[in-house]
Image 1 (cartoon, rainbow, N blue to C red):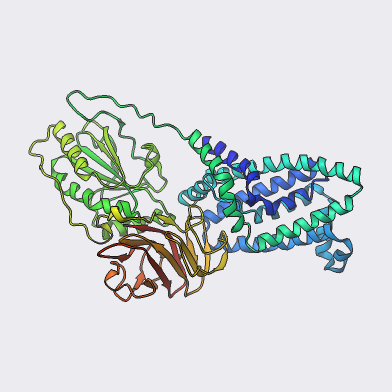
Image 2: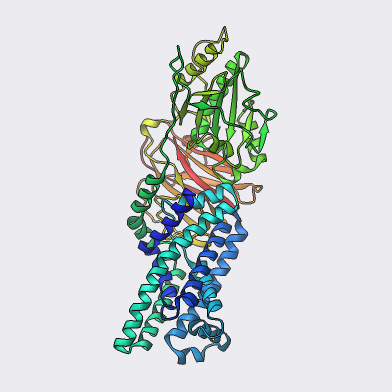
Length: 570
């Protein structure tokens, strides 16, 4: 319920955002007609269509993107004729009469005024591209993570209804203002023409991508702090209560939740809290394309091997971040390639994640032999302290001859520890749901568009070249020869990549400051910068030695169909 209210309030705030400007003329063009028969159906049609289209765009794959693109074209044509009929009757008569007749019916409300307004609202819903700020961004990302569901559509519908509420208030006030102007100035026809011009300007702004480019950037400065304040206000406080344990420095933080929400298990039959009694348990929340998880994995593997004969059970809970990580075959392949031999619970629906109230990758929960959570650690690092917790819990369980000392795994490749002291580039997402510092112009959401990267990039800014379709989680290359360029400051550069169809092998070539990387190549490229995408995972593309400074990285894809998700650095 809290998420629904938050989404609704986020929608209400869109009236303050410049992103709403292109669709305002479509709404106000009906302001001189009865609200219940005209304005209300229009807003309902807009909200329902936006919720449906946004759900499909988040979870429906490429076919949904293309269907939405055709729908937008049809909506632009319809609203163009609607604007023309408002602007000039004589000009409208010279154009194609069937379409003009339809536009005239929409503008005049002859016949079924409710249905004509509903149709206009559906067209508006196809074109409306609200800014994905602190509220809508996580909603869209959650939709892509969790798949199509009634909850996904309800959240998007709540957001759209919030926007419709604020627009309805503006429409009621605007209708009274326009009615007063007509009575006092006798300017009804001129007002009609002005609205026609405004409708055509709105159509042009959307066709040129200004709604997802310039206005998006303006919007972030206007509404983000309001939305973030809402999130902070309703975010539940961490009310974890601990109970001291006599003779121990580790309190009780709670009970081991049920693991029944797992959609499958690897390396083990299903485990339960009851079957684990008497064992010390380490629960590791991870996902196989998360660089932080990969860097923690050598320690988790080492603990599992060192203490497996002394009462420790390690359970890796694979909680996906990206949609492709929900595929059991992808996870099974990653578990094999990463030499994970302990039990892995597939938490594709994030049920176990929610049962733990977890919010992080990686996250380690330490459970004693009585099924009580005694400690936790979020993120990388503090491995010595974590291992001492394992040793302490084994000792409390009465285990003798517990191995002493601290593991020191020889991690290689992407799993090698990051040079944190010199990492000045943050994790950066490519999908518009959480993208930041995109310097390639307006990002056309959920439709194919041509991009060009500026010649000069500031640190931590990036751009696209070529024909790409940008979705909430990723960008898909539509034609060969596309590029991604990033100006970064770190020793290592990684990129989560995959083929859109999940099968094709895609060739690529990387450069560092315009030249082959040479000795700075990553484990997934050679010295000439050549590599191949063979699965959906994280690829290490750059691994430097010596002093770290700013560099410009470019990856060119020689084949179409690549799906790019996020950059990480080390």
